[in-house]
Length: 546
Image 1: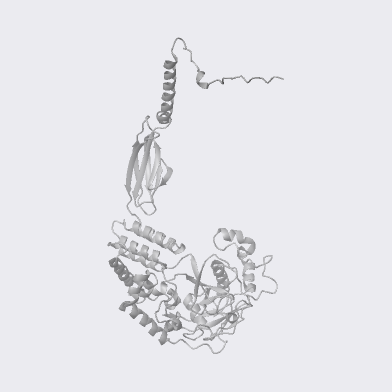
Image 2 (image 1 turned 90 degrees about the vertical axis):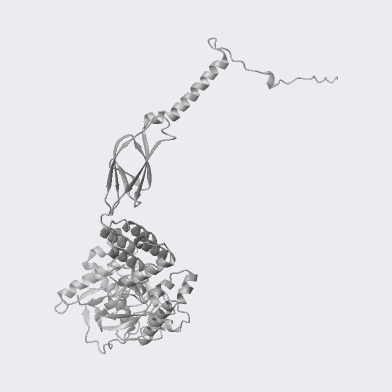
């Protein structure tokens, strides 16, 4: 068999293959391809640079305003908030620039346009509008309301101060009210910096400077009746280095010494009632008389033991005078609240969704109730899962019964103020951390025992039970962390400060069955959003003369 001889086969080379275009109508390919490419490029440029101008002709209008944050409407349609850039079609346009409490400005503009390059490089026109402040008092009212309802102290203070500074004749009274109200809510360095910046806007001077701080303290002191506790407030807010410098000053030392003398003096109060004969009873609710008197709020015992005194805002001792009133002997029970719900079905658990929608309660309102009623066998426990608004509705219902009683028409029911609550919780004792003295009793002596029937603890000197433990209790005061340091006489006669007529958080007192007696005493303050409903939060009522 003969082997075949391999043949040398030559593979085709792509370079040997060429495509040749033929002339079209006698026109060489190089010419008609150039024309085609040119037409395509021209179409692309026309579509990009001309067609947008044919479809829409106008300008980009750039609006700024003093103050910023004004709304802009073009021909009655909302366009945005300054600073703003908006595309506006060519023609005669009416533009309105407005902001609450400022005089609105109306502009009549002839908006131009162009066809060429209208998309990549539109025509632009800048407009700046000055808005005169028309209602300074209304602006301040709105700012104070917002300030009380939100924790965003820094933003609100600086915005409101910047707006008030645009008044034709700035009012020193309005500036004082804004700064003093803000001081009641400032509890960190950012808030203090905002307060300084706001003060600078309203009074002139370099922001965040030593001179600015001095002017702020002077102005706050003037408004607060030259409160001697201002350095104690500043020491809790300043950064470490300036805080150390302040605490080494005579000003701070004098304030601390005054507080120590105040705590040591322990002004007297009226004697505790010796018999329960002078009581008011409404259904199953017993109210005990609390005599008028003067006492020291705060943690004087802790202050006396500190080598380098730095206390939380509320712990600094301060003297308070309280008028006589009645306080409920025990916390409001589930049984009492059930009677209220039966007569006021709008507050029933079945109506929870409507109450939530109105902002009066949270989703867990009366969450421990079953089929619209308290759990069987637990009717004597304090009612919990109730908001401050629900507690006040209950107080109004009790007040109606008082008015109908022959001997009750001269009293009204409400939540106690913080000063009233602490004064009553002390039971005539002074300088002690607990209602019975220096040792915890009742719930605080056995934390974790769970919610117990109202009246579980031994009575204090005013015959009141459960003033510490069982359930935290709502008060009538909107919460301010600094009120005792910034203002003079902020809690005199048990009244909440006039500037704090509304807020976001209510002050709560008394601890609960979960509280540690090492950290909760009669002076301890807490705060909760007013609509919250928790398993450790209830209330008791006070009776006062109108």
